[in-house]
Image (cartoon, rainbow, N blue to C red):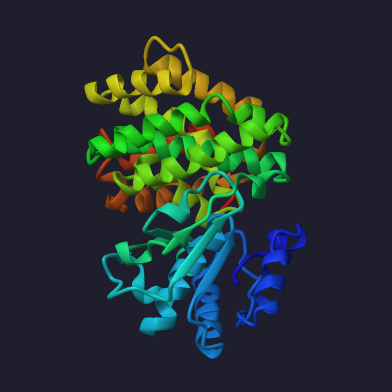
Length: 352
């Protein structure tokens, strides 16, 4: 059983652990997955899976827990370390059978074959991408999100909107992905703010859980794009929750993407699915910024001061990530990426 301290302390794991223990099925527990799992944490988890002779692994938590679980299940079976599998198509086969149970409505990790880990030495985040990462079973229970704090509800929920939006506009989007993205938006758009302001609203929580899962399925059949490319190096260097970054960056990136005719059409359609009466993509961008501000994302991101000297390296890392930049509707240069960082972030020009 894999989880984190927060989920464990919230009492979400105890009933499952108790029942598995009663049935003598529990080989061990690991509740030390951090908010941004580093490669060495995954290696430690994989070693525990091997030592305990586990024949199945259950990850219950947010995206970090599920991502760590997916990669550790691979390392436990195929050996080496997590770093060996970073990249696209480097996983040789299935890992341990896995059950993923999300406790947030946002990442969609239970539905995807991507895992994102932190590489502190490089000040970046890296992806493990392979169909072999797909969970054997995903259990999406909205009740597990009922007591989620407002800040986490806001960040993860907006990240789900970004997943659906980027899946919709990506150059590699399929009709299946576009349909899933629009359906996800129809659940997420009308319910995110309600879920943040009134976490006990069960209908809003249900809609967010369904929308998040659909958004995960959408980008699994398409791709995320420049918003996520810009987010990874920033999140690798600074303690800003991933969903806060994507929620604050999406409108500014989309303003650049509107240079593509296809993106303008897609965003108008996406706005309707969100329940917004936007005449054009620029109006949608303004609505997205307004929503991010109302639910507290901009106040969170501007609590962190980013060094101006880090911007060129972050922009270079973002633009070199062709897994995410390649499918973006328009190419972004390093200078444009720096301009987006400057527009959104609180920058210290003097710090080195």
